[in-house]
Length: 400
Image 1 (cartoon, helix red, strand yellow):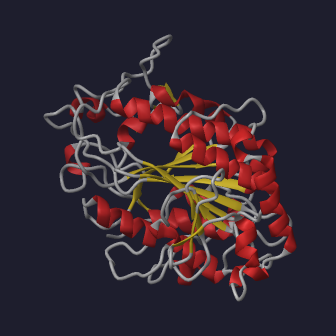
Image 2 (image 1 turned 30 degrees about the vertical axis):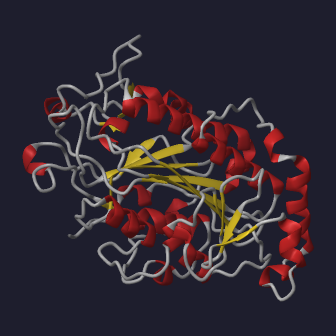
Image 3 (image 1 turned 90 degrees about the vertical axis):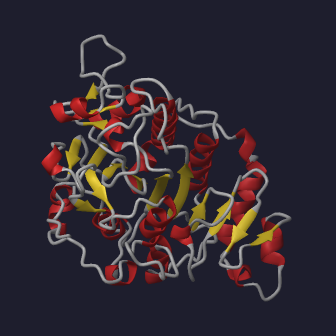
């Protein structure tokens, strides 16, 4: 498949490269289970969308109708459960890339997630994840223990590899799963530094003091700023704790978390229902993170992804089946948002991929690569995305 350079790369600024000053941070969020991107970012301006979804389509925007699409640009709109994203869109801090994803045609959740996290579509033998390869490609002068953190119980594929990364379920109990060995390190952070001949023992005193600060501050009593209110859910709690790590100054550069439940084969719902409930939680938590961090979002980018999209036509169970291309969100104070990027392929029968799915026009690696280069400051994209040439030819045009 031959894809043209994605339009958003010509117009989105993802911040200045991290070549000094404050540390830049990427927060990557995986919507596991394949979210229905067509009901998340709705192409209400296309009649084929409504023809294909008689039961689950979101109504066109209507004044005073809370069940309708939230119009963004007259063609695309947000699911009504995602109203918390509208202020970010209006302030141009939220960009959307539609018809994006993997060029591989698998409809297996396991394989598609593996390909997206390894960033080597169609290749199962890749040993590490693309974010770990990023960490390997760029030295951390601070040697922070918390350079890469996943707020998950186990290390995700995207952070597996030679570079150090930490997975923790909760800051309050400090249950840590570190490195490739995935050995649990219990007993608090002081024990890590006290162990003889442990490579972590050489970490700087500033990191140690930051960790001590976290313990004494009692993470359970953390108070978000700027009136932010996180949903009381595992996903909301993960983002709250990522915000806390950023504020604590522990050297966080890459954070990861995920949220499942998006495999809506049956009774997906339209404005309300299964999908709407998840989208409300998802968007409210991310909006709370943005509000909580405030000006710190100058140095933070949030990126969302899902392994593939869903069929354009609803199935016989008022749901959708495994599809192809999808929608991604990118947000932060340095994003040139307020626009849906990517070439829209259309939803007519002769425009669909394999006669059933939204066609792909943006390779997800171009989105990842733009962020790795322009936001995180990577200069070695070949090592991060082996065998792939990123479509990023005019970097000077991306700066805000």
